[in-house]
Image (cartoon, rainbow, N blue to C red):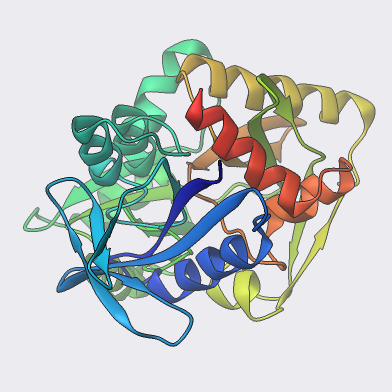
Length: 324
């Protein structure tokens, strides 16, 4: 009997368009002989099932069901393709846990923790995970530019604490540009993190649960045409993504071991993609994504392909793991 799979996409953040692309790729890729796949758009003003003719049917949030032509449809599993809130920050995970519906991403606590860059890095530091020097600001705090620069130096990165796809991020070279960068970050979130610039090779490491085991995928090296790996570099072709990365054997072993260690420490499941920069030959963790992009151009599917895993196998494994 075919399983009913709800693919949730969209979301409440600036990343919703990327999420719609990821979710559509999952929908088009899933084996239709094995699964009945449904596209569910989740927005602040509506949760709806969208059919092939763009007809919308409202989701009953009491049990995440939908009625089409007087027939009630329930789901066996949810494939989470929402980048940003509420799919990557724990809200959807907690909701599905409450109603007893399996879903493909990590649990609510892990999602909330990793989505909060400041909290996640703070939790990992006692385990010896190296990170950039950082300074924290909340909306309304007094901004002491000299104190910030004394702590993190210049250039530095100003980031929204809880945002993805490089929204709300700026690279700052001069003290005079710091306030503008802070204002830009506060447009995305009421918390920001200011980090020292790490000059070195940037890599992205996919770690997933695949066929019941933790698997580290081939590493991707990020070479941005822009000043850093910003939105244009990620989504508009302004970067080179080289898989496998041009690392020494020692560097590869170090970052693989570290990425798996982080996955295990945080008790992750599903797909993750961690970003690192090598400084003095040691990988420093930047952040962890728990609902990484799943389009044909996205890094994680590229890494899976290098490992001999097709998109269909990647997505099916995530569903079967959730159903366990």
